[in-house]
Length: 300
Image (cartoon, rainbow, N blue to C red; front, side):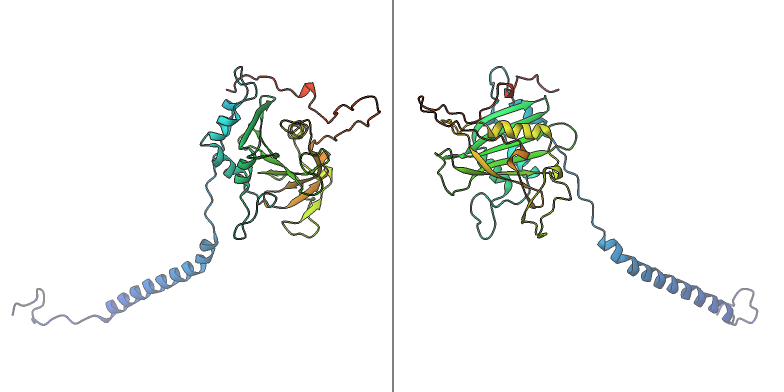
């Protein structure tokens, strides 16, 4: 057996207890550190788990609508081509998300989506009108029943756009739609609330209707002007202007507010009393000459 260097006796050196203690202390320190880290991780885990990731902001782009507005060749715009644009329905789905229950019948407890409802009311094309080189009004009606009319109003300015859908719905009570005395409801939906926080339903239920004062409304004048012009137009092929007796504004969460139709720009319908001197003229309200929309230059 080869002797150990610097050990003349050839015997192995005795194991020193001091070094063993320092090793045990190091291991013990590591164990304590691991336990403390585990306790900290478990304590902070619920906070991290409760924190929801931020939803990606959807980019808003509605400028492409401008290509369908009036020009020299199409003084009423190109609503038919607009409805066929592949971007149109996804735009409706993006902005019109409130629940509705005035159109159609629920299937398996679910009503037709507002985006589909708006598309239904714009299927038969009417006009694409522009105002102030900023606002677009798209009008139409449903297939086989044009008294059910729709208006899509869009504010093109800014990075966040106000999009409003309005629909005229026959009450199905009393006179038929061929009678000037037939009554209609006006429904107005938007992607932003048009009523202030003070205008809350008395019951607190999201679907309950409440009577809202005009002072509690946030209605752009350009919107009420467009609604007034649209509702004053007679039904296609007749001189009948629809009598809107009730109007409702629906918040994005589905809260309904009943408002006076005049608050939305609806003009009263005046009838002339016959005098016996020949047939009385039809004096249902019609758009004034100043409501005509000029042909605007293309937006840059």
